Image 1: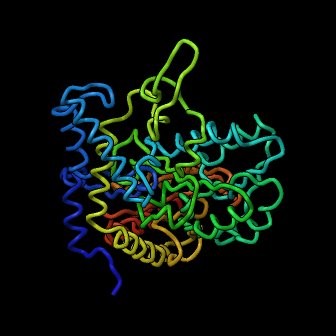
Image 2: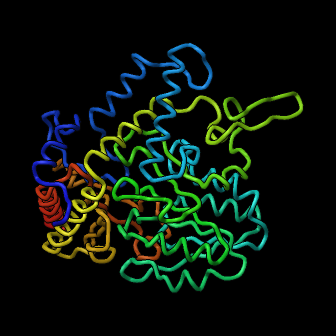
Image 3: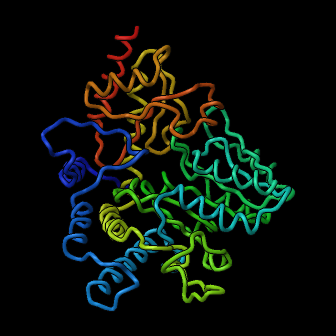
Amino acid sequence: MTETLKFEDIINIRKDFPIFNTGKKLIYLDNAATSQKPSIVIDALHFFYSKSNANVHRGIYTLSEEATIKYEEAHKKVAGFINAKSFREIVFVRNTTEAINLVAYSWGRKNIAKGDVIILSQMEHHSNIVPWQLLAREKGAIIKYAEIDNRGKLRIESLESLLKGKVKLVAITQMSNVLGTINPVKKITSMAHKAGAIILIDGAQGVPHEPTDVQDIGCDFYAFSGHKMLGPTGVGVLYGKKEILNDMPPFLGGGDMIKSVSFEEARWNDLPWKFEAGTPAIAEGIALGVAIDYLKSLGMTKIRNYENELALYAMDKLKDVNDIEIYGHLAEERGGIVSFNLKDVHPHDVASVLSSENIAIRAGHHCAQPLHDRLGVSASSRASFYIYNTTEEIDALVNGLKKARKIYG
């Protein structure tokens, strides 16, 4: 029997989220942008600032020592959640974007040279394109893009053909934030390593929604955000293999990332603090650890299976909407993200009609303009699901789309 969340589980889960218990109707289907927060995460932030607030790694008084212990425990929780070998491979940053930029600036500027090849895919988020474009422009490197097919799946043969010559880096998303495509990152990692390249995985849409094991995947870097997985904004994670992180120069210079400083030079701190200059997002890091505890209590396999059920249901029900085009492949092979367009209706108009029904979706290019160019559209509407969404909410979405269809003809 498939492990999944049950109806009664979802009812109880929704009680944990204050935003759904205000007495106002809200159907929140923009989880790929950011997730809502359970009370225990909100309470963790309040508790730290009201009862435990102190800086970390600086004071020898009790409050500071307690804050340091909690902050470092959060690193250990993240390490356990993605099965890193050590918490020293877990660097707290602001978000996925900063994690990728850290790798581009620190590893990239040391290791990428003129004529080197960086491989991305056509389905990448801007955060996994622009940093590499900046690096390539500075170093004279070449960016190549693995193609997707008309169903939105990565063409493995296209990637394979690119993995020749002076390939230094492959950077690819685990799950497309537009198509919901789940890429075979373990296989891609093996392909990259055989070609002599290192690999970075954008896990912003991966870690919140399915079990993730970086040792099993074998990747060199893995980046994700706390705010997409029930945690607060302002904290994200870069996982990096210890030997690679040790060899990288610091990303930022200042307090806490040093062991010693003289007028002539500085010596760097141990991992991961070498990459966490200045006062970090302490409360947010601790609250991310609490969010991880919450997700683990539900079970990531159950979460993945439940979201797959929602995606299957949505794909089936959306067929009832006249003149709708859905982007991506079969729901059995995708995450809980569905992007679509109504013929001759702008996505912003669709979103406006749905908003009048208290349904929140995303409309635009979703920070993936090159992918929309590949799809031949300037924008799309996107509904994305999480643990607190229901089939009844999908029914409401479909009815809202039918209303938009009727309004705009």
